[in-house]
Image 1 (cartoon, helix red, strand yellow):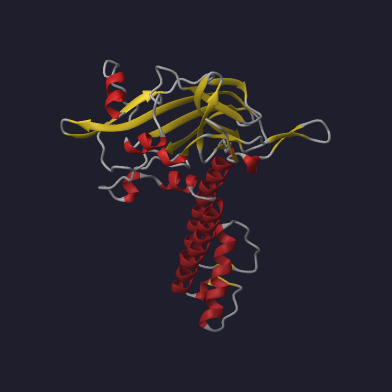
Image 2: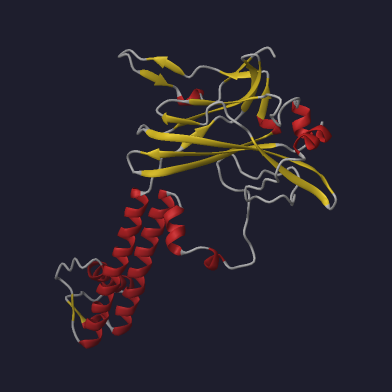
Length: 317
């Protein structure tokens, strides 16, 4: 079957979507199911491969909140020890006590200065302590400006997510067979002008070792104007399809992978949303179809059960 596939497309232009034709890790995915590329960059330190702004903008909200709290506590602790180094007697209004009591007084004075709240019970006295307090106020203004920008960036970025069924299927379609996959937007706000691009890749023997080949899969409908419901995309398996005549065992043998890129316009954010996913041979089910996930609500609205996105039913081939 591999020789037939190679012969069928040998006269077509070589296609490389940017993932390379060299097989580095056999049987490995190019794109993970969550849409991330299966690529790890090494050879440079972490701080040269990314920036703190990018990293803080990409981590989860719990991690982001934890980083903000840790940074706030660390900064105040640092300045609190600086005030203790100068001498607590240079902070007018403090009550002398044990070391931990003095640290607490200095820490809360630092918090009031960093946030420019300044309740007034404690105030700096002398040039050194006043200069340190002025510098801390500047650090606080700049720091909170940066964190405010990060929070705004995280809130303003389009967060619409397109969910893909864990398995794609090959099932009877019209007079023949078709490969299909189903997807749905996870958020309630609408997506518009969605389009999909699907690529089939396999591995074959080359003069210098295994070589990865690519061919587009032509979809019956590759774009929709409105995307408020689930969408099942269909690739009819005709004579020109690279899937023509292939079985599940054939797909496993040639280390096949089907990748999809979907773009849609998010009306709420006014931005373009990109989503990716892929299916290896083991993720492609023959003789199966998707179970319905839409039903009629009591008020006449169409209800979509997102939990049924990947629900499969058997069908005769």
